Image 1 (spheres, rainbow, N blue to C red):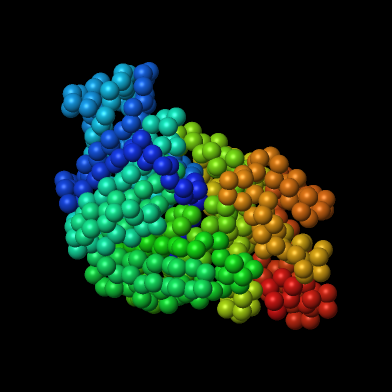
Image 2 (spheres, rainbow, N blue to C red):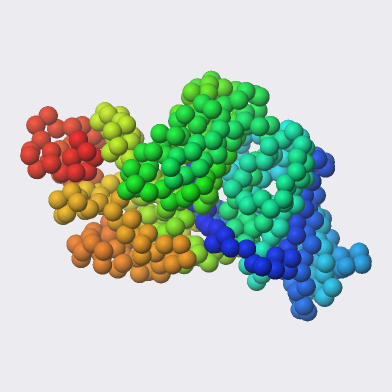
Length: 511
């Protein structure tokens, strides 16, 4: 069984670096200096003045709806002034350290452990490995939220990262490189959120470039088997990007993108697993499955499709809760149905809409969504569940099921009322124009904004199926397009649909 945990990680600030970058934080790690998979970290910091100062590693990052406490990976923390004299620093809790007298603070040092040794199907700590990483002599996956911390109240400081590495390893990331030699690279980031939004993989070179008219994509892979897989994976990603461009109206949301793909073979026959974490200019994909380049490429296609659509939702369109994310105690948005449900709907709707999938193949995907949704109760509204996502982890996966099927119903309703001219693709495009990067919406006002773009009937549709706990009328929605649910709850095409059903189905999926 393939499990895909898609995680919604917002968000890079605009990549305009402050002119006085030297007033920010300068961080150094040396991958050549490892002891028991631990990295030594040094941060040279600007003057913070007087008054207590708190240094922290994130308790949670956007899209991770359970506390990871990344500070648990940090070892002894030490603080020094400019002359190398130690300053008092005390651990307050698992991921926070207090510096009571920061006057003269110049440098902080500590070590960090890696989050996982290998990506395999026996992992027991949650489903969030793609938010952490591994440190080995031959390959490193870095999520910066597990390595570098921030000073509370100073998250907007720029970071300069000095990465030292073995000369034979290639560094893949979407971070901006300001200096580079075979064994050292310097990266510049606008602030802490920008840093966290750009993971890095350092491994033996296995890359492929995809250059299309409006996007340049790097596919960087590492298989622990030593076999090169990037070229095979790129062959599947290229048509995916072409389909996504057409599906999104002829324009892709980013100009440069990086796929970081880490593969480890499964030792259980028939078992495989994938974990994906998307960012505004890259995606990290972890795979545990047999070494079959074509099968790996097919699995990457499915994960990559969902993750790339996240460049729109929520990395472009999102609420204030995501725009102003608190790495310690975030406020939860009520719109995971949009961020995850709509993103997953795009991923399953696009192949049939673009002619890449048969009706039978589409119905297999649809049937699985309906079947799995029925394992979840309908006693909580999707908006309420979204706000309680951390407490209701047992219900979280329903956003990929009920949330996706709701978006299907919304798409059918929009197509029906507009004679096919306007569906969720056009709605999301309009939301991008209204709530693009740097223009977050107020969480409680989104339904009003959608109603303004569509009509009061759609506002009522959102209220009924998102704000109220109830089962979705999937059978009614599918009936409008000439598809019925049989006695076993399986979707089947009616042998003799009406003219209206055929017309609406053509508007909806193109056939």
